[in-house]
Length: 211
Length: 275
Image (cartoon, rainbow over all chains, first blue to last red; front, side, top):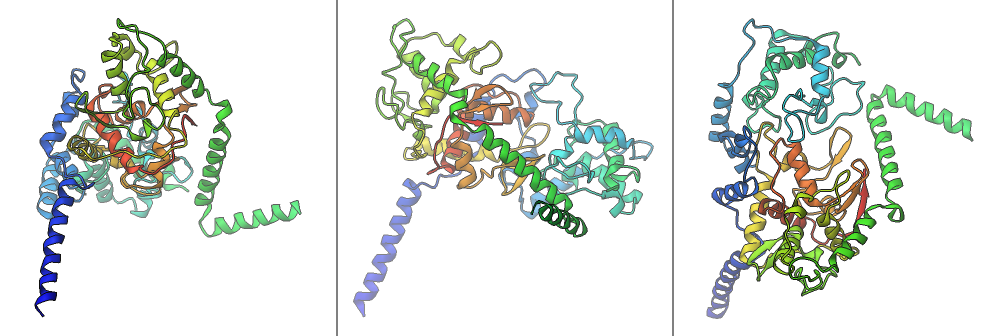
């Protein structure tokens, strides 16, 4: 009985040793530390143009979402949600609906804010890159859910329109680490543009609600 | 027969409409058309990027710099002057520089250390355009073409290569700038599209990563220029609303190593031709 037990223990010891060597020399890389990664970032963007410095640095939400690959633990999830809700600014008169026609242009436009754009290039929301919207528009992406008949499905209710405005203003106030840009919080789109996109989703006359 | 086909098609269309499949059907037809276009332009005999390969070959053997020598003694990792299969193993660690380098960093290193060539103007012409010929793009096309028909096989054996790979992976998931995008935002899932353009999932090893990495450098029909992966990553950061990354910087090398690792075992067929 002694021999098998000895062999068993040897096997465990050998296995542990192999695993240790595997960790040290194996193909599996250790995770890079935050300091290491940020040093590479500073070295790769040595002299950003004036006004663009903040684009290189991460804010706390970006940092946590990157760290947890958009699946943050419960405490971090709650912290992001609270922080992002605090950024929400609704129109002073309470009206979240602008012009659906202007909203369609925002949804279709994918330029603005790139280093190849001029400073005064009007920024678009590029919604169609990721979402289906008006059913008649066939050139749409699938990174986000379909928004076809968005307002109609929600019976054009004003509370739903307000929720959509909030989602466009800051998607992470609804879903922490959402892939969707925080258009209002980053001041990428103006309040009027966000109202126009909300109208594109909620106006009964909008092509989004008319297949 | 033809009438039957037409009737059959009409019947199918009606059925498709009734079952609410019309949009899907139209999408499939559009994707087939895009695929047909891709096949049509993918003709190596008509690919202008082979002009870049030829220019690169001439540059490789031209004596330049204050030392008046060619690049023929440049060691791309497989030994001085050995070109076959070198691109398939880049980025890699170079003991003489004590750094992990990608193809552009290594070419610049050889120009500076071997030829003592002033590279300011060469870097200024890093990307070709109307009236601008890029020595570096041409050289990359020439060197990469010498690995065409081979498979990617990067080595992650040294400490510095492991660090570079780990940083590359972290950069792939790093969200930043005014749209909160990371590489993974667009390239982290299977079967996604941006508008009608299919997006390869580069977050895992496999065919999409292999086909992506194995087809750069490529002639971009839409840009009328040959482009390298260095330019593709620069363009990705442009779309992500980041400032332009520095040319031949370590962040780009780290990402390239990570992506090449995901493409391990994939066939290299370059220069290719794309939309």
